[in-house]
Length: 94
Image: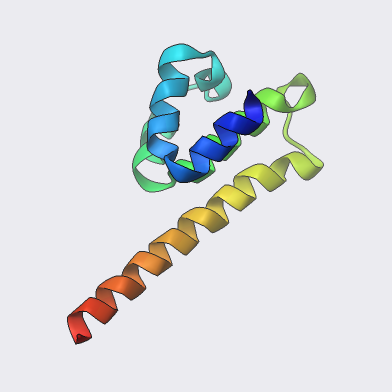
């Protein structure tokens, strides 16, 4: 089930965050509601990666390779932002 959530999360991270909030306890990875809301709007894949890593890590502590999931999410978010900016720039020239 976790791998399926991760796969869907890469394709539709914001929808996955909403579904996780409504139908699971994964949103408990954060102590306040501010960070998940900001993550929803600005870095959705990073937020999703942090939530999943926090819930899958033994004892809920992120260390070592558990930081790889949020780091990959950050790379995905930054790559998507760069790709969108590139497409916008090309559309203006053409």
